[in-house]
Image (cartoon, rainbow over all chains, first blue to last red; front, top):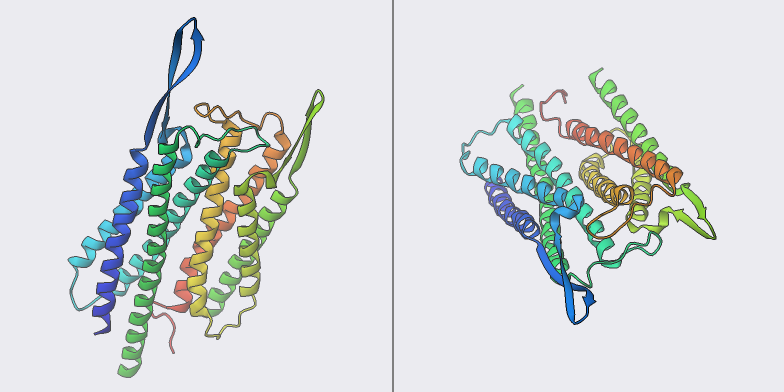
Length: 186
Length: 164
């Protein structure tokens, strides 16, 4: 049956998207690097100051973590709903709300991933005009972990777009079937 | 009767979104300010920051797309395509708006931990115009979220309101 195949496809895509966005959120949330730098020297004793780079320093990264947590929670909720709802009759309102929620969460994932991407680009290249120094040459591990989280979030974003398209097509097929059924009844 | 008001509502929403996106592009392109202290002069342009360039390009694409969809005839088969394209355009709008807001927030408040000073104190008119462009982008985004839900109802007709 056609609905059976798209059910399996949707479940597989949702599991991958859940894992990708959760990994992105966790890697960014645990992103922290401490570095001790020599600031001055008094006689022969060097004075060290330790600087930390945390993800909370940039609001874009905080939004990134929150957005990815929300998208992964949405995927988890939908997986549970899909597994426990294998009844043959599917109401139209269920399919419609799933499609709309999928679309809204896809846009949320896109917002979070892109905000962090441009913030990271600013940290990597700096900005000559505003005299902002780049920070990636000193905090290399912080930048590497951040880019890993960004890659996972973009993979999750592409998967969310495919999931939204599949949900819309399921809604379309269902409404075509029920329209054909009512026109054959009357 | 239902169909006519539906179609009219969709056209009005799309035209308003087109105007908002176009306004955002124009406001950001014309923002340019020169400030001088002593002998140094600093020119602030939108193209200094990559996120603002992305914002301009994305909103330009959105305004061209909504202008083209305004002229799509009622019974065309392309409306099914328009639903997915609307979703992609909304994702483009959110990404450009959030990137521009993230970078503008750094410009306004600075980042004490990275040693980045805010620049809005030196070029206040530039900052105000950027804020206006971002607000227009937000209005376009909200209108497009409504248009998404509207397109689904128009194409898929999930509650079978139309008699065929």
